[in-house]
Image (cartoon, rainbow, N blue to C red):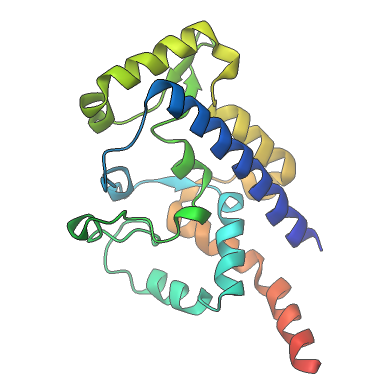
Length: 199
């Protein structure tokens, strides 16, 4: 089925991206402050549905899709539906589905965009610039020396675009992107349920 192929392909891109980001972070020293989550508190984060196909699949597979949709229908806050704003108070990270987070969530803070001279510039937050200034500077030095080795936003977006343009091109509020991903898999998992029930 095409849906399964899309999910597998996106997961493969994310696996390679996580390795790429991990290598960059290890050399530069980049890391988020413990239990921060400030970036998840933005209410205008946009994403594409393809980024959340693995999350949608996992929600169906674990029987949590209806609870998640109910959370989106009746939100307690305006943040991403994956984010628990009270987690940091308990000494926990805020993303409840971290393993299945989207492209924007993986790249922000550790990824690079190309400036007008096609040189990579780190896309990070004020908090990291303040708390990890040396690491941010080191990442900038790495980009200047080896620009082709940096994890670039546009490179990974193009890889998702190649998988399915219809799911990768539209940028929308993150909760809407997650909902669209869930809807795209509805009939795929409905068919699987019907097959299971008939056996």
